[in-house]
Length: 354
Image 1 (cartoon, one colour):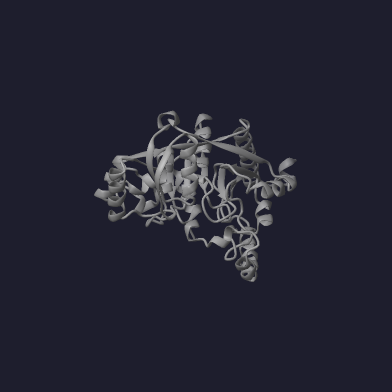
Image 2: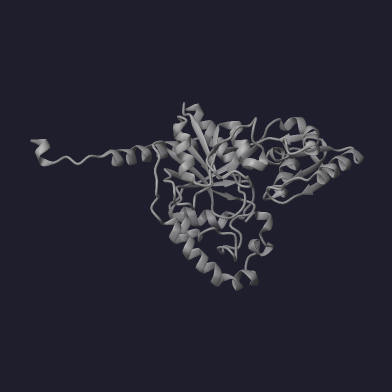
């Protein structure tokens, strides 16, 4: 379920709808928790770091994956990014080819990952991870899959959007939680706060009481000084378009008109024509996100025309604590070495020691 499909009461405290659905949420949460507790059915012979989310919807996983990938590459790792390929038609394990695949094939997130590192999409995370290992990747970074017990992870970095927090706290269908929060914390190695706001404060306190490290981040816009004073028509089809609009305003962009679309929206020819007409009539530049640009590319003549006219805003996530990345990778590597020793351990008989 995409966040744009989520009912408004998911983000409202003490809503009667959430309480009315609480019995169903309890049952769903128990089943989801039991599944999450299952022992991982497979391991691969490289460290695996998972970037996850406590709730349904976006929290900045894509730029966080790239942050980790860039750091790993600086250490000399060959990075493989593993994605489910949300929104794409291809579900079997596939290496992304930017000259061949478009968003219809593999989804927008996978295309962005492929610009950064070798990327495989696979509905079966185990098969996807094995394909990355076959192509000599020395570390795997998973985009989502935190609640999925199939593939063993050496580190779970779980995100919370500071603006949205955890919603009303109920599990689906009464709220946006994938699994009850306290249960997910048991499997969390560190919490990473993205964006700005105070909606995550309660969750941060709970994570701290549970002994989980909490790291904060800030967002950097590439080329931000070039955009100050620009008068634009901004459009976005992401989990929270207002977050993108706020980012533009924070760097001095004047949004004269805005257009919101649903998460992972597929742009039609008519919608593209409308965007072009509105920007032309109002003499405004078109500004959009990297994900929206990925969903426009090679999807038709009108879509490519919009993309030509667009300024695509590139953002990067940076940790407030410079030591965070080193800490995450050191723990992941130590755990990988430990499990590798256990997996390769042989039993020495008394006769063999004589």
